[in-house]
Image (cartoon, rainbow, N blue to C red; front, side, top):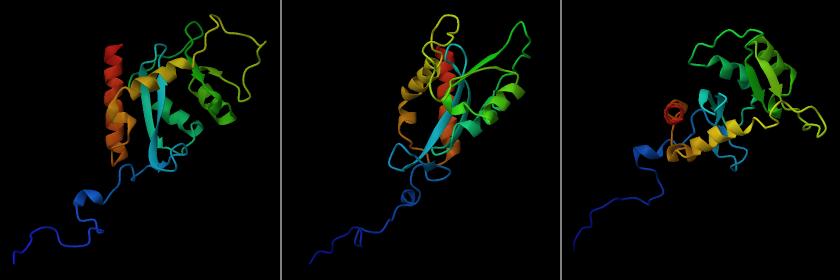
Length: 176
């Protein structure tokens, strides 16, 4: 008789060290768009060309509104003081159409352009140029999707995910 060498056991037990912690489990929240799998959300602040200026990473189930102040405070550059001749504009979507977000915009001395929750009136006032502004943020998110590492959440900790997002932001800023 020849003894067989190999793994003993039923195969139902996890035996490897890497099997202990699933991807995105630590610090991640249930993703409402992906069957409740753990995931992250990237909150972006972009300039007029769509280049990411600031990023805050949270669990996927965190609302956008409370993250406005940390996003504005996470700017890595020194922001010039706005004056009446050179105001600084901040365009936000309908998720920020509430009193706390308007207060943060006012405290940070931005000129806020917040989309109303019910949608804009078709016969309402149109800003000069008549173009929508939201597409610049969507373009920045699409640029993030060009980095394969960011499309699927392979990271085990939020810090490593945040590092790859910052690297992607640096590459986007370099390329534009």
